Image 1 (cartoon, one colour):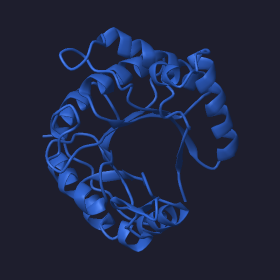
Image 2 (cartoon, one colour):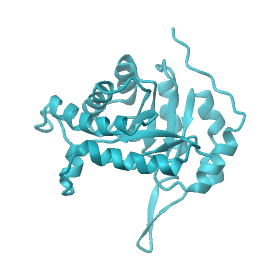
Image 3 (cartoon, rainbow, N blue to C red):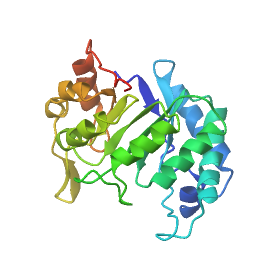
Image 4 (tube, helix red, strand yellow):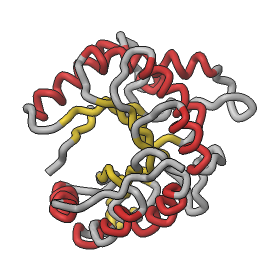
Length: 242
């Protein structure tokens, strides 16, 4: 029931690829991966170019320059645009600098919709200490099409912060939670939220302004099918500008 598929390009920016010994043309690498995704989608779903954190930090936390971040994402975005993706998803963001750089990089090659989602702790702050409401305010001012949260935790924990975002949102919100919190059982990572529990809060998320739903770590085809069923015919209340 998915309406949007992500390209397998999480970590496909030049910085992350180099860490894994991939030093060939970043744009060409991303284009090939997106082309494979287009074949898999077979016209049945939109294709989203997936961008993720570089892992670099600006001073004083690190030594990267902002231009370096933009360039790393620009190479990736060029390949995704050449492959004809329908939109862009900048996900699992942990720093505002990475998110801003990725948005600017995408805008340098495309005017297609951009979705941005952050990951945060229980207090609603990212790894770098940015409150997700502050990130929302900055990024919607840059013209993104939707903003939200992914990974982080299960639906129940995420709903708390989606409600906080609702107060400041002028764009639709995104909810892409994990299937609960991971646990190690017999040496394997196991998630504790089955499909029926995963979709139990869909109505409350809709009330919080969520218009884009998905599943992150631990979710399976069964989770997505349950989500599609829960959303069938569901309404959406768009955040209203003041």
